Image 1 (cartoon, rainbow, N blue to C red):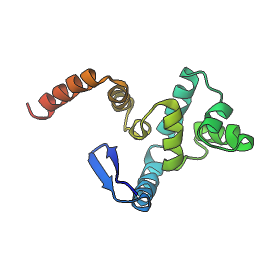
Image 2 (spheres, rainbow, N blue to C red):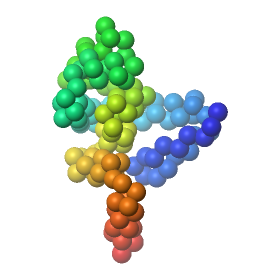
Image 3 (cartoon, helix red, strand yellow):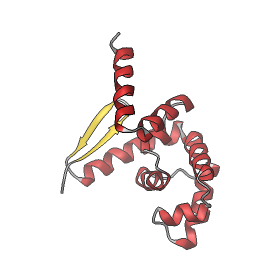
Length: 137
């Protein structure tokens, strides 16, 4: 199996195999569940509505069984349940939002993460130069 690299908010984590990656994501899930549940629910709903997808459409496109897709997405969006990181990653692929977007500490950081994700190559280079100047004045 190939090497998977997943960017996280504080750097880059490299995983040698899928079980290591899944273990990392489970740990992240337990931390986030306590702190970020409402933000995840809000961002999931906002992006889905902006794209004009129904809850059922989003769930089915993310690989959920059609009979449970709408109720599951509804529970995620109401904050009743929090999707596990692998499910949230699949939902993010459908919504074109990277996993860190959902876990961002505040809306400003979420906007920056999404902006970097959606930026063209040249725009990313500009953003990187600006971020480097801020970090290393």
